[in-house]
Image 1 (tube, helix red, strand yellow):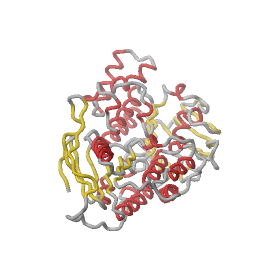
Image 2 (cartoon, rainbow, N blue to C red):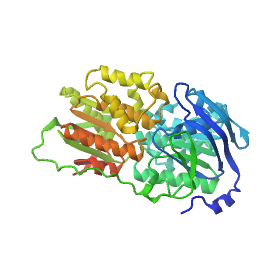
Image 3 (cartoon, rainbow, N blue to C red):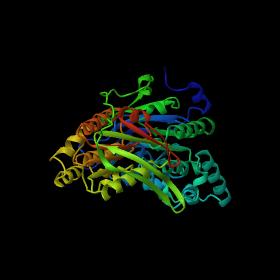
Image 4 (tube, rainbow, N blue to C red):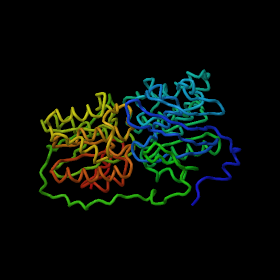
Length: 459
């Protein structure tokens, strides 16, 4: 099946909005370029999907277009980028803000205000919109993204998925004609993902907005994309001319798990967990059991209380003096040193696991990473893999993972499943919150589903 849409090209006149020639980017401390002499053109109103393995350069390409590379990331950028006919190579992000909206993989790090309403209005305020227009646009975007009931909510009290919706809304609100989105559905449930993708496609078709989106869960995006650009991990870019339907139907093949035993030994004393902010419950009282040698998954829509439950379990494990580790949604919070090698060496020096085990886990998940790379310069998936390697190398009895497939490609996800199976065979208790139902079904001995902070069912 051919990609591209001839009618679509005629409708928008086929005019090129972004043109890149010999685009090359490299970080100063890495061995080879991340982007190597890339040439491409993207037309008005096109929906372009970027695919490629974890760490192949998708995020770096988006950062180069918006000006974050090299002005924020450092490194060397050469070649040519034209946007709307103007040469923009070397321009800073604020000089392109009226043209381009950008949503990164960890939007919470880019928030500039305190509440949802303020964040949605911030970009418009910087561009000089009138108060009446800002109010109208905020209301419109909040309605489209299901944020009406959250406008007064502090951003720090939102779930990861809710924060991602706010970031998408903020990028849309000022009416930019180009939207760059880096894994925008990675922390969204299936229903909200469909709504967001449908909205983006509508903007392309009806308003001529150009969308460039990187995504690992391609099954969600294939039906919306006009074109697919593939980065192979060697710095080169190619355009796919046909759809591989197997991408949309991917299900990893893993060894069958054993059934949960009625005689399973508890890893954590059974407790009721709850979490509230003022008079509002993020998590109503819920009782779950974590057993040695079992994996429990927690599923539910954005804001259903999954992360709150995980933090409650971690605090209880600490209270019971049980060795426990957590990999949060924002895995980069765990990375505080100035190179990959320093992070791995620190993990080994803590003495909680076998020497070198963190390095072996990292290579098992995503292959070799240049050890001199600053963790800040890694892709979100690479940062997650590094954080996983550090935490899983520790001899913890309870392992807690919040959206551990976010930013991982299919191959890395399969390797993570095998790694979790190995941990289960070592009698570890694993608690995983995820929006990835295929992943949850593959790994879980038991599942907890949350709806509005309450337990809906169990298996």
